[in-house]
Image 1 (tube, rainbow, N blue to C red):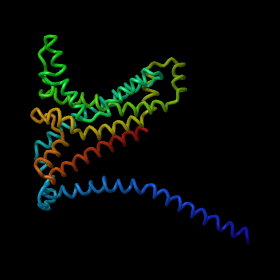
Image 2 (cartoon, rainbow, N blue to C red):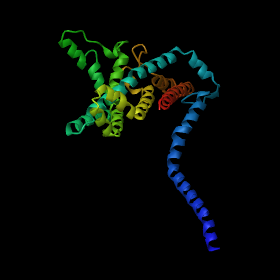
Image 3 (cartoon, one colour):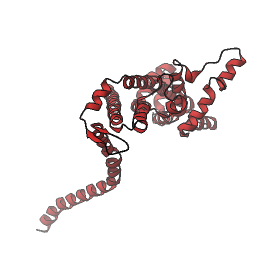
Image 4 (cartoon, helix red, strand yellow):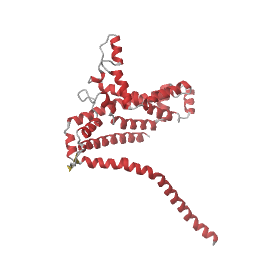
Length: 303
């Protein structure tokens, strides 16, 4: 009888322990869950609800209009131009940022004080605010008194107004963004490269494998998940580009650098059309979410 009682009590004790563990886990999760619901989920659904209204920033106008704002977006040429500008900016910066970060990670992932200093230098630019970055690059790219303009004059070349030229304005913003944001993906790549066993590289060296073959057959497959992570992060970040265009070109010349986030800002806080701006924000969210999910799906399919 004693043995039977102990045996029956064991499952009950195990179930109680599991329930307690689940309760402790949910208690630890609760603060993050509250923050996630309040600052991410609620604003998402609230923004969609506002996009269905003619909603002014100041005043009591809250007229329900259904999908009228989305219909207006379909026939808004400036909206489509900002979408095109944003996609062009992301098309320039995302591959360039990923490739440059990987190249820097491979170059400075070596022991020694010099390479530690170089890693710190390359990462330092990412801690600057966007106002500091744009101020520095305006001093470099200004067509009248900029650093490059003075250099061109010294060698007898007519200076180029990079920020005022329709062709050069967007690449100029891309260069400033690359200089500013390359530190974080470089650090991610360095962390991923350090996880690859050195035995594999030693075996490849014994087989007289070329550097290109080592990169293609060992390094890239070994950091594939980090590679996908960097791509997704850069897609999300670059589609939200705002400060560089606002402070360096103000969307010009002729709206050639006006991005979707800048158009949302002007519509909501300058024109007070919060409903229309929210509709654009919902479209931007769907666009970023779709591209990110596609990238993740392609990465899993390759795995």
